[in-house]
Image 1: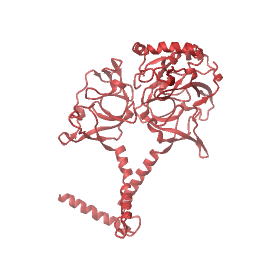
Image 2: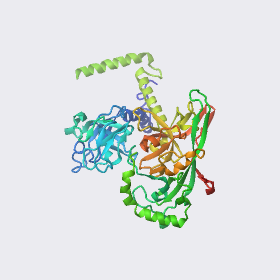
Image 3: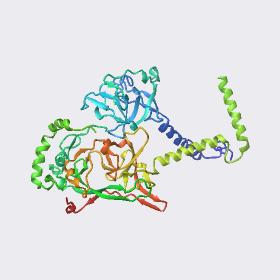
Image 4: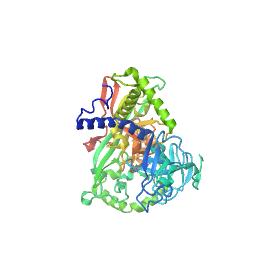
Length: 182
Length: 125
Length: 201
């Protein structure tokens, strides 16, 4: 038996061929899952929380942006301005997309409904906010642990007219942020 | 660290359990308030240990048990656990059923107003 | 497109050359062996990562349940993200306030909506037992849990960094392996007390 696919396929029944191909493709599933989990993944963005950067037409159409997410060492080397995907601290079953506003050691002037005016972002935590108006972000649940972050958005793939690299470093700094105050 | 949690003195826990996570008074079967003393009692033992000679690999370790008490109560939404280690044996715990109910009723009514005033002495965790 | 075709032809010649000595053998050429190995490693990794792993903890925080050094335990990853975790279970989680990938192993004392002491209760033999009455409590926020080490004198846990997001939980400790011949299922130490008279202060 020289090759799995070529030898003797003629002789096999339709069902035999079908299961044979099914198994052959199924063996590619584990590597695919590994890549999706640890290297890169495609993500559809839901909702208006990153408006107008992502989903600028969320109230006009059902079309969602498709983004490329980089997943290697997602909790490491975080920078202000990056758009990250993380598991919601309130419900571990859901994920959210927000922009990193402050890193550990920064002091942030919060927005309502946060009960205190200033917050010092503790070690291992980041302060995330959505670009849009009504978003449930760190002003609602406080700084989040960097380990909740599962990936960062590097490219917009769809729609075509906005496709390209996400230039997060060009995003202006949020007013009310004091870097590395303590 | 994550969200802002409101802390309260442990002796008042029988008042605070009347309000659910959504800030509303819990609904129970029969419409009664939750009586902590009637809930199922659970125990869990933790320890205070001291290693006699931490520099030696197989040093003798001595542990003293610390008993923690919990009550598992039920409302319409399901069961929840209340740690009563500091509450068991207090005046509220030993008080009769009727007196507890009247005090809790008053407290639960003013709970939502209390929430704002408590922000001042709450601590961010 | 010429360079691409050239590259492809070079590649295919190389493959036939490499495969030539193995012709007719079951194992096939090196490329197929490499792909097969990669697939198998991925499969094995996922199987382990989503079922059970054995790891060992270091540190005095879970004395006397786990020794300071050398105790291995079996972690069930079915319970990752706090799925079906109950009060009294021992969980393995990413420490939220650390910048490295360090792992904590602690006992869960409160799930979302439960009420817990924020501080440390005092044992009966210590004279500070009366201080317990002044302790503060909180309600565990949604999506979080309250974890405390069994050795409450030497443990960095929720008392220091607050409630831990359930999403950081990697699994639940289901068994301990103290030696290859000493395998024990973990028992939940959170037990119902039938007799109310056992409480004495």
